[in-house]
Image (cartoon, rainbow, N blue to C red; front, side, top):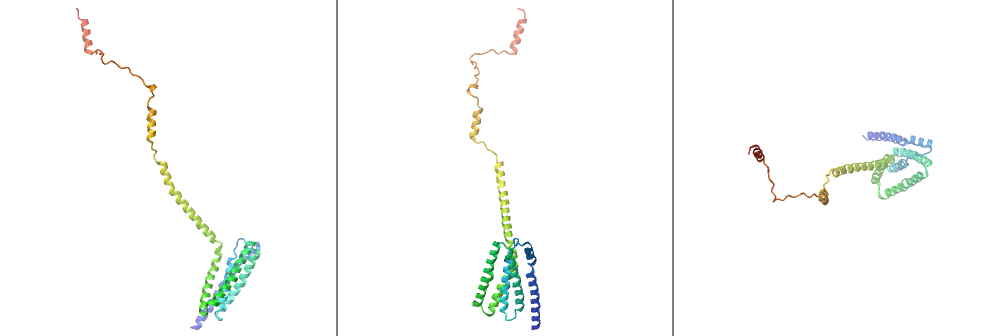
Length: 241
């Protein structure tokens, strides 16, 4: 049973080293391109600096296992060598700003940060607790190594998110205000009382346009001729005297 466990541990350890070696060699095409064009072309040094830091931590962790971390030491030593070459090439072909930035991160993370972790672990932890603490730190920085290449696209993701928020707000406010504008344009116009009074005054005739109608005297009577009266006069004229 113990022999089977050891065989499985060695087998998976070798497979892990092979995969880690392939991961360490993954940036080779990038640096071939950088060397040909003699320019970093916007690439960042953070993935290589963090990979070097992670390999250094794994070596320190393997040294705490009393000879059981041989495979970890070998593959991470190779990783330190490869990542160091990457960083040297990056600094060689980088512009002044990128070179200074890389040296700052390298000094803060790989020297001061690594030294601080060693001091904390040596002073505050012992035995199995030290292995657990270092194991957690190593796993955390291994995740950071795989996430480090995303540093190029993370600002773009943030910009895309903010741009989407702006577009959503634009659409919301645009279609929220449109009904209000329609209501205002379709609102019937009411005429004030003052306007109505002005229209009435303008429609009344002026004093010069007034005409005086002749009045008849009601005391003077006019004979009303009837059809019957006219007929009798005609008959009297025709009769002989």
